Image 1 (tube, chains in turn green, orange):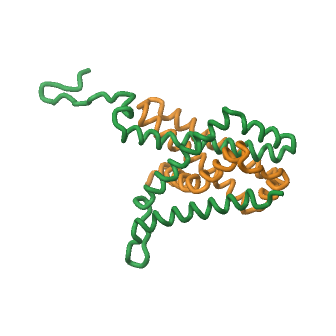
Image 2 (cartoon, chains in turn orange, brown; image 1 turned 30 degrees about the vertical axis):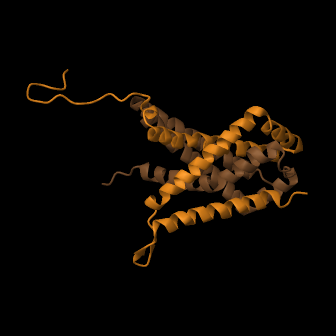
Image 3 (tube, one colour; image 1 turned 90 degrees about the vertical axis):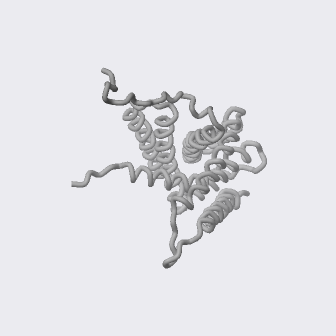
Length: 137
Length: 117
């Protein structure tokens, strides 16, 4: 059936290419940002495997450490680090638009909201370093 | 009657997971994924990690990070497939698949943390 008739205009629908995100750098940056979720997902698996190995015993933990140093996994984790950093920066950048904080009747300046996220990031990173490394023999 | 949609809740889980993974993961990946495997930093012993996991606060943070990050992944993955590949006809299957995988991951996370002595 035709969607248009003598009295009805033709629909103007330009088909969008499946590879539309390769057309402009901004589109590509968008897809890169969205792809970061795959690396977030991978790292959850990596963390879960670590905890499983630790709970399993000394041998499993050694095997996990050896596995984590194999070239493939190491390469994947270096790429993961880049994507997770990109995710953090872009996510925090969008936060002041999504999160409107009010102090009394005044709106807290978006810059301050952004700065708050970065401070939390630094504090959290310091805490992780301390928790994981402070007790080493 | 107001029809309840799951979408607002899913967006909330997505943002919470985005903030938490953004704040915690870079350092975790740097240490556990790069610095320790490369030998820049000596790995913590198994006993030390067990002690870290023995703290209820660490366990809570670990569960929150894993659960919310999994939903962050699921939501973004679903929407990227939708926008990027324009496979609308598979929308339902993709949604069930992604949130399903996230739920399985959550169950495994809780199961693991349950095992911590």
